[in-house]
Image (cartoon, rainbow, N blue to C red):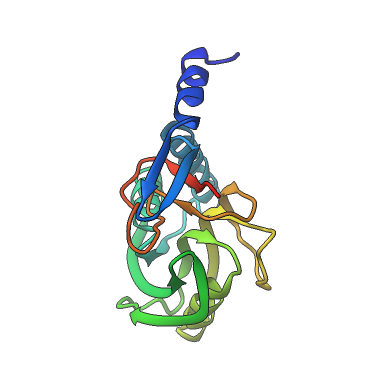
Length: 192
């Protein structure tokens, strides 16, 4: 059955263009669809970790909104920690990951789910996966709100994916352009 109210609202928001710094962006994923897919990902995690404890490791700054909403729907016993890494400058990756804030929790022998906002090349998560394995994690899986398979160069699985998107620059719902736009409740795609 078609939800006409959502369809009409979606059409109205898709034409909405905003400015973030010196760039224009158009809504590509509305807030309602974001929440629906975040809950779907949480359901997959709940199914896979039923009866087990999990350590969630969120990647700051971008994953803070996804992690917060995801964990509201996670029902398994869990702990949460965060690491802060950076590999972006403006609208492109610098190719170098810099660890800014390390993991303060002991993860030896634990099942870990890394929570990331976006995986494009996979450079950032590859660094995090190596770090977690070196710290003795029992298992490590990856949950990403956005996955861009056309750009991906990683040699690992992205286990939980909110959305698969083509190569394009996006902001909102934690994603930023030079630090701006993280607070937007939808995801916006750059208008060239």
